Image (cartoon, rainbow, N blue to C red):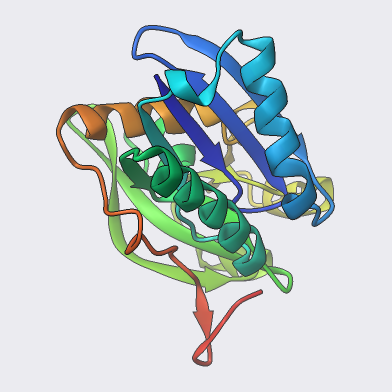
Amino acid sequence: MLLAMDTSTAQVGMALYDGLQVLGEMTWTTRQHHTTELAPALSGLLTRSGLTMDNVSALGVAIGPGSFTSLRVGLSLVKGLALACHLPVIGIPTLDIIAAVQPVGDYPLMAVVRAGRARIALRRYECLKGKWLAQGELRGATVDELADEIESPTYVAGEFTSEERGRLARKRVNVLLAPPLQCVRRPSVLADLAWARWQENQASDAASLAPIYLHVAGTPNL
């Protein structure tokens, strides 16, 4: 059994997955209450699924980019569980979770996650052999900067407010905006990605696993 946890932003989720089925999954939006909400949520998920941490054999965690505080809180909990229960940990970049559920096609994909201070983190993906693969560097921008730079048809997916979706939709010729349901980071998708890497013996050392932060002027973007 693998327990997956994503606390990259205010959009939080966790899932229990055994490689064949999702035994439990939950997502919610928190108002910067990650510290107080995560442990009770995990306990509730395990209880409702009829499981305990004794049933968990590996941990998957989203490692960013995202909010500095959100990532730190989630990663701290996962590392604590890994060390206390002697479990392997598999870190998955947050933008890979978004990309994994988008329909493949001929156009490139721009995956987006909120990074604080009205900025977003984004990365370009190309479809190769039926899978989205990251291309180029992770970088920061504003929604308006993203809209202005897209000059050819590009699929865009990620967390946006309704107002931001409206601004992006004005460039409907080139910005192919994913529907809201495909912009939710499903923890079960994180679990599936982590499971595949676990089966390939790609677990990380819990003590050294570090989040991916978007840096601005040499400091973390909170």
